[in-house]
Length: 373
Image (cartoon, rainbow, N blue to C red):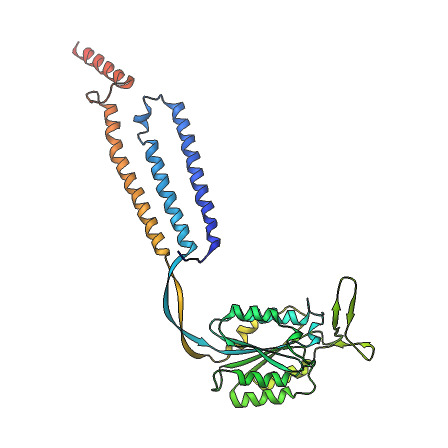
């Protein structure tokens, strides 16, 4: 049978059930020993009429009920059904700079890996939005078309790097142009571009291209600047435990700095926002909620999803039946216990004679004889 577990962590509650059973058994054993010290064997059934077997059955019922409730929390599912799910959200194209300057290590572990993690942090906040990926350096490539399959998106994102493009450089304008043409919905609004780069672009006119895209299609552009904007950082081209080298030009090492001015102008002209992440850790989930998520949503086509059927209500129902059986068993125990106590105190009862009843009969006979005299 094809089974899906919704929450494996809740299996840990079974340890709590086991602890309850262990404590109950230990208490029953201690109680039995206390009774043995207090009364002889022939008095025990009259003083404590509940049998050990009955207590064992009650413990089993309660333990099974608790286990069923744990299974309900675990959210066990089996069987599948097709259902229609309305889709609503925005279309977001992520533009990721994969030029060599993004390998600079002023951000940990480097600018490129920091950007990947920031993109994933934003995607984790999404619910229904479509996401796509364009990578760029000296040329541009659409790596992932717009999709709502976030796990596939993140797996592909992990694999991108400078090897994705053939030429060095950083043509942000060309990347914006490609992303603008990649949106599925050609109507105005509902679209956003988020750029992750160190901002080094001197030849593709990114501000003009972004402004034109905003005027024509309502695309809002959000920019995230990565890297140190004062001293900058060297760009490693080879790294090993024994040897480390850096990118050079005319025999001198190149120091890459973040150019935040270009990114700020792009955001300003397109009703977006500029996030100067620099070398700091930035809460990109909050950035998404505060800025990108404010873009007007649109209704997408309805998705047809083949999903597992929740079965938690079966386990809840079974737990209630077990608890009901426990309650009925407790009621029947009280009804049966009363005649035993009465039989032990009544001299004319048909119950087997013991030392207590004989003592009662002897005292009663002596009292009658004295009264008659």
